[in-house]
Length: 284
Length: 293
Image 1 (cartoon, rainbow over the protein chains, first blue to last red):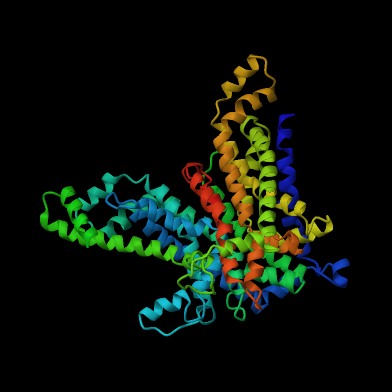
Image 2: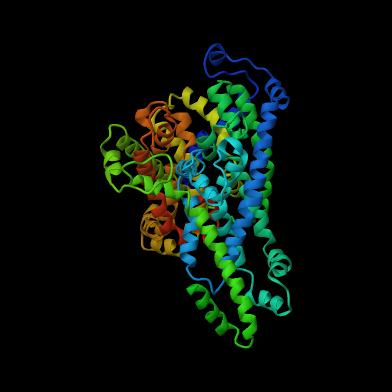
């Protein structure tokens, strides 16, 4: 009788989370359209959608963009800056830890629309844009970052947004590294870089790997942050797979194709997700 | 320069024997200060436009020194369409959070106290659900909602948002209920309480902080969501702030930058404040990663 208490939760998750995932797999085998004839009476088309996708430069390009985006923003940028922040905020002599910590957290805390909006002003092509004023100080000519280096721009925006999560995860991991160990290495004459490389890093390898999986998974799901700024453009320069799916399903009305693309994305992530759940060794 | 002086003093006290070392240390510490300040600036500078323009009578799309006014906020609350955005955001987020918690607390109680078959599988499955990126299910979800006539309605969006936040809520609350000794409930039974009476008298009061944390996380997730309302809602009457801001920003003809900046400030304030309350609690809970996005 008491397990029934779980009923409402199971029902909500089953209907609004599981069912769409399953229904999506079915839709991927059809030529369903958002409007028109194929909306009312879709045909079963087998693997056509998948064949189209896997031979489509646009879709493969979107996978490539997502891979680039994940690799440079999440795996490289957020990890390095998050680690730097976590290591710096651990120094005993550092004053104003609370303020620095709060500043780094702010980009993560605000809604993604606000995050995009702030960056729209920074990356504005006008001379008065924050970025252009900054390079003006160093004598550089004004640029239009979102047009001239769109991928780099959105990578930087996403690094900015994700430093905090990396920092938090690494701070928690670093708490388990005994100070004596680091001091002992320093006394033996090891420099800061060597201490990090040979003492600290091996001790927090597990949490770091876990973070890399987690950030990869969440970064693949990034949509609003980029869509708000570029809508996938210019051309298809920042068309991530998430944006590809949205545009094809809702703007070009190709529900079947969009669903098949979703399934491909899901399949790729499920592998990472299962590894994550296995490795995170959560207690149930 | 003042900081360099204090730095040198503080290192000198730590490393008494090496006077010459302390100069090297001071330089190194100063460099690390520079690093952390640069990092903090990188994080804060993008907000400059929003904060300055929100109080600028002549606000434009880029940073400029403001001609101070609070008129943008007054206009936000008196314009025809903007107060509605805030009301919609509140309605959707509060309802979805309430539904989420109502389902979550009972579900979590069952998961915590009862060893039924499939419990472990269920816990791991909902953890795995967290890895499904929203863009990967949104297409099928939209079509389902259309077929159930739940698209373009508050109810539909609230149900979806409540469900999407449930895995995290269940995990958090299960942990919180695990921490309440079962003996307390058994003692209440001894005193004649029913099982539900014991839940009401023992579990509800003690689960307070966990419930609060779950509520804030669910609220912030719904409040900040962009993709789901973008896809599910068509009538501007139903738009929450996230969509309202997006539409206002992409309205090429005439963007009211001052009101846009003021809206953004209003929109970001609740999560920024709520996060302050949460911070200490959250990262002790194993599911801290849930707050991203």
